[in-house]
Image 1: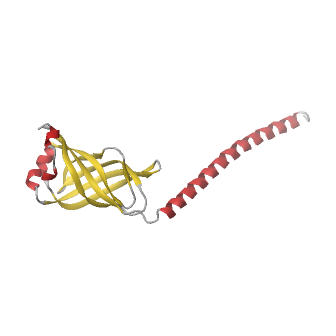
Image 2: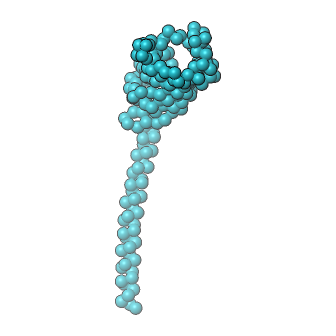
Length: 189
């Protein structure tokens, strides 16, 4: 019995020592990650304390990408001004567009847009407008008139390869200028 007890205690100590070493490494890694996360959070909060939303400037470069009997694809540039003293990248913007509360279609961003600090920038968008939506909105009759244009969707904004998804919502009154639509030859005319 006396010979078994030291062996039992030695085995128990070795198991406990191995267990403690494994848990210590694991806990040490968690502590380091927690500290880095905390420091990153502090740096983000102090470095970006006064982030301002980009200001909508307008729409330009509207053109017909393709024209069909069931749907039309429109391309355009959404122009904004970045009032912040840092640049970011924008990708995967998507929005549902409404004119006077009538759903027109879904618009998506093509590619990644780099935004410089304190500068104007354009986000190229492309949208599919089903024929039924164009008929319901009576778009030709709205030409030259002020309409309420609304957009609801999301965008990924990031810097250094880290992106966050932000919900976007816009609503404003604009004169609908169908003369902005250029390049019907690109649509097959």
